[in-house]
Amino acid sequence: MKQYLSPKELAEALAVSESSVKRWADEGQIAVTRTGGGHRRIAMEEVVRFVRRSNASVSRPEILGFEEAGHVPWQHLSEQELEAQVYEALVQGRSAKAFGLIHGPFLGGRPLAWIFDGPVRSAMHRLGELWRHQDDGILLEHRATDICVQAVMRIRLSLPVDSQAPASVGGSGPGDPYLLPTLMAATVLRDIGMNDTNLGPHTPLAVFREAVERFHPRLVWLSVSVEDAAEALRPELVKLSEDLSAHRASLVIGGQAVGKLADLRHPNLTIGHSMAELSTFARGLLASMPPRHESSAQGRKESP
Image (cartoon, rainbow, N blue to C red; front, side, top):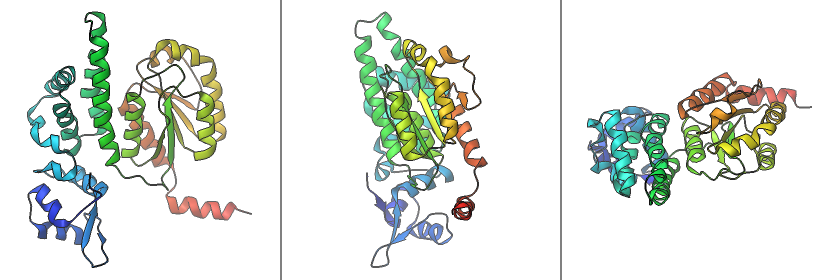
């Protein structure tokens, strides 16, 4: 994936004139930088942001690094049809089609939470049940997981990272080997403007605490996909919530096995059942924070 596009390249991707792209830049709709020679360049993260928020039609997605999105007419599919086609593509190991069915809605402006809660979650849930009646069920599930991880990583790498944005940290706990749920959570949080750190699967709670000390997050997420692992964590989670309160960090727990923890209660602990709920919680957290310049001014005032 290229890091920057010229106005001409973006115009080709969107099938518009180069003068239109330059006009959008002059109007402030697209942020541009200048080369030493004064030529406009547009960061790929800014290109993706503009395409998604403006509902621009992408004629040549390969220029944006999402070449497969141009080969799948997902716009004409109902939500149920899209979910069914993602499942069939993953079962058959057709990675290019799966990429197109996931990346197309992303470039089309659909919320990531909608994509992850809908087509991806539905397909992976069905795949997770195949082992019950197919000898190759586990093989198919693992291959499908790898395809989805690649698809989500390509999205994640296309999103901007603001090192000054409020931090978030998360992962899966010990005994939980699933990579995809926590990767999707990190990607959703990056998309709404948080500086995410994904600790991945099999992460001891001591590592979560170390990450909190180092990165000072405002949100910590914990993905629980294994019922036995969730039960084993139960005694420690309220204590973790209390510890995070002292650091002004909120704990959000979600995942396939979160029902095992639904009765946990603590003012600093939120149980979520979808990426949409995680996104809504995080947006509310961001909205409650003072603007960055006010926070900096307050910090200077309180300093000795």
